[in-house]
Image (tube, rainbow, N blue to C red; front, side, top):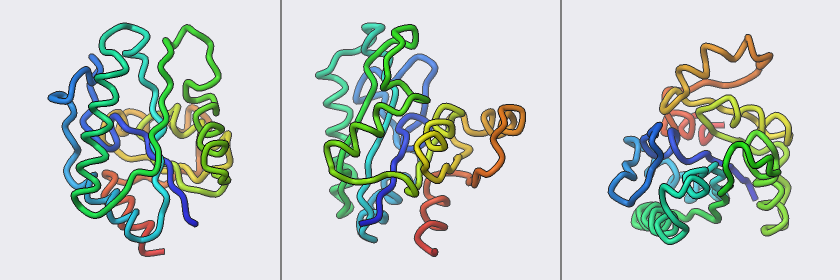
Amino acid sequence: MKTIVLDRDGVINQDSDHHIKSVEEFVPIAGSIEAIAKLSAAGFRVFIATNQSGLARKYFDEDILSEIHHLLCSMVEQLGGTIDGIFYCPHHPDDNCTCRKPRTGLLEQIESEFACELAGSYFVGDSLKDIQVAEAFGCKPILVRTGKGTLTESGLESNGVADVRVYENLSSAISDILEV
């Protein structure tokens, strides 16, 4: 079965430097929910891997994060799609955990829980950390210009990243993936 991993903030929904702290602050980027539903309909297993340090910073709690993720899954389900799993790092950037991207712990969790192999799968993100974790795990990195993507794109070469497909948004990336 085909598999894809998506970052959340800046890829699926509008990003905020102040974190997404409530259901009301979760605003999907135009076309992103539809793109996820299309992936699902095309036979992809869809996983989300997201850093959520707002938990460690006490900006929101596990219940609020669960409500946000329930809303996201419900939106996709209303269009006939499914998100197979949402994996998140709850730690502060200074905690030196193994799950905070660009470390690979979230991808290892997906593989373990779903008995799948992510190497060779697409990983769509908007930050250098997303690209780095994708490369470290043998995934095919895709950068979208939404969220922090435009800024990330300008620094790819200086960070030693060369072979990354870049799209305007998740919808255009998914359209291209589904054409292949």
